[in-house]
Image 1 (cartoon, one colour):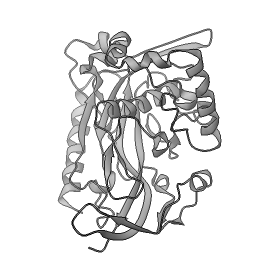
Image 2 (spheres, helix red, strand yellow):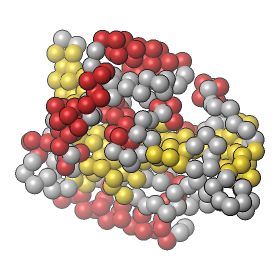
Image 3 (cartoon, helix red, strand yellow):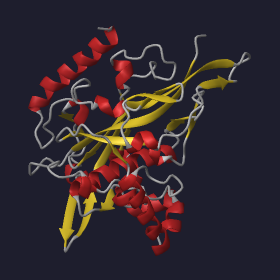
Length: 329
């Protein structure tokens, strides 16, 4: 076991024992990078443009075609290698009603008396629900933490567990109007025609992957706009999944989201996301081992995912599609 892994486990142990003194509903065990990760979600793994392991039906059928041999011209001498693709567990996203509830480490930070102002809420009247949650976005390179696939150049071995975003300190997340001022393009999609187009995206997620060109849609989960913590949701679990997906899009709009190029030679910043390159696996309040494409209707998967009253804090593991050009030099 590496020193990196020992330090990570030590930190988790420290926070596990320290959380006992914390009051409130943020009461959960730290995430276990071994048992809480649905490792089957890394499949299918394609080597040389051929699906070698884990043919998972729709996902394998809809995988983009890859050339067996890749060529990268990033340096003076072109690099020739073998094309590899898989799904990497890389980020954690909290959607919590308890402000500053850090789900991965099982503790709650001091909210400084702002508990009531920043707390989550959910109202459902006559089948019309309105949900508000805070969001935390973590750098969580599981493969690097566990020292797996150490020979692949595409894994972020230079990154450690870190907090990238806390919406409690983000004014636009807590105010819909301010969010629209900062992201005025939201006005373009606040009309029936744009909403109707999302029906096609929702249908696509039932039979396969979401439609990337409809970037303002999240399938059956609603719209990506406004980039704030409130969303219309009749299904509580689905609404939290939608906010987690909105967090991914928000990271792209703030210049903090990177995607892998199709040839596997580089990564690029993605202010407009490609939705089919992300899947979400629920890890709290219950562990759902199957990751879902963004927008898959909750009617197909949310049953028994919110078993206890008061467990209003969720955590999601984001799997992202990795394209890698592996060379011997």
